[in-house]
Image (cartoon, rainbow, N blue to C red):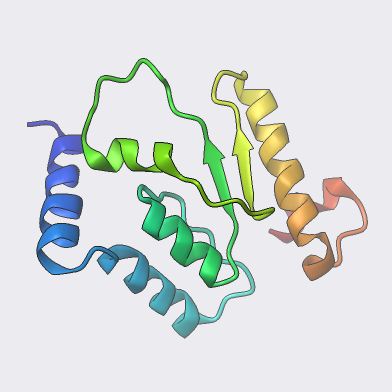
Length: 130
């Protein structure tokens, strides 16, 4: 069994199916609200219900497109393919681009979202404030 398969079984098959479908996102949102940071980054989400929860709590989502040749059929690897939510707080980044383009696209999106909150004057200033 690979570490990915172990995480799929524990996170989805046990955590989500045996306890609560939103166990991980609810716990994360609760922790963010408790800590009350200026900015919180959740680096992974796998399910449409998690995306809905992030958006419902005034968050934004950056979706890196999946490798379409992946043969992993576990629900945690495929559910976001069905994401039908339309929102200006969902940004998509093409995984076929080279790493510099992906980084540039991501930083531009982050900059646009945070410039007012962080009072950034120049795009180059973002790395010093985040």
